[in-house]
Image (cartoon, rainbow, N blue to C red; front, side):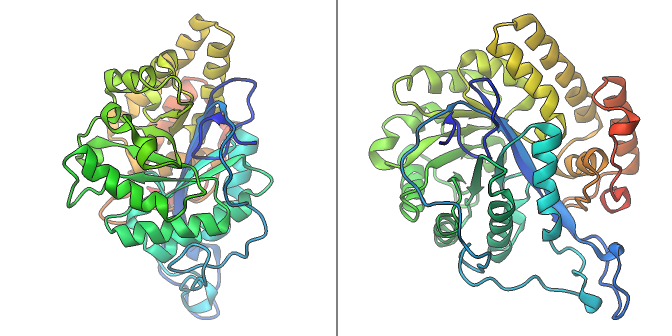
Amino acid sequence: MRDERAFGEPRCKFQCSQVLWSRSCAPVCSQAPALAGTPGEEGTPPVRPALGYWRRRRNCSSRAGRGGHVVRGRRDKELAWEPERSGAGGLAAAGEINFSVIGRYVDYLVEEQGVKNVFVNGTTGEGLSLSISERCRVAEEWVTKGRNKLDQIVIHVGALSLKESQELAQHAAEIGADGIAVIAPFFLKPWNKDALINFLKEVAAAAPALPFYYYHIPALTGVKIRAEELLDGIQDKIPSFQGLKFSDTDLLDFGQCVDQNRQRQFAFLFGVDEQLLSALVMGATGAVGSTYNYLGKKTKQMLEAFERKDFSSALSHQFCIQRFINFVVKLGFGVSQTKAIMTLVSGIPMGPPRLPLQKASREFTDNAEAKLKSLDFLSCTDLKGGDMEACS
């Protein structure tokens, strides 16, 4: 059974109504290819992290199964896939994705952070910096490695091209993903609700058996159509619509999404980690965020306190999380810095981001490590210390 209210990343089996999802990072290669006859770890490509969230259980409509698919896929996620390009000596070339660590990533999220739902190829996963074939392969690896370990895997299939987005949606269905999500196209933008819904409708129709989620992130897309407005009558146009990943600080808009759709059993997945407790009070059914990659345990404590109506403890946990986020935001915090922190905490080499993003500085990583320790988020024994030089 799927989580009752949330979809997206693999479900977390908490004794709570909400679910934590992790947005996965994409591991990438930071070194040049090794010379023939000189294989070694230094040529290992970086990984992009996943994000996580919490959400309620729901009975979802039928969809493609998750098991039994061969990991292939090139332009379509389940179709014949071209192997990753390798450098001499069998090592991946610089900047290539390190697919080999995704299995470790899954185990880390489940065993270390208690996160069992993942949102793949989103913002933290640098999905829009990957080629279509790379996005297919990443999705396949998460579905394959997450089988019998993760509860839900939602694949972000948004793209500037409708055809590419449809291809990715079809592939997600073929490999047995649990759902798909789509952002608004952000170059030639839809300027009203009807135009946006027409785009989303065509993508959803490419995988009609999969639960469909709209990924609302106006700060990055520049599409300012309010989510509340979009949801009005959306299931009449998109029957597979199941919910919203709301990555915006406009709590008025979020609150009205919940208030005006109480009878529809939508998943309301909140994507601003430092405001999660406020969103829970308003009716969020899950959370998708980058910090759940390494603060999953702490966020889980907040969620459980909220479930048992211990609001004082829940607020204390949220403030503690905010102290860390406030600290790193002042230093400059984004995808690059998330990957550096994930490498530090998990020991999994996430590698640098792809251009135009720049690697996090060593100074940032050292300061973030000190802050995590000062807040008792981790001790020296918690640090796995991956290849920090590749990330900073």
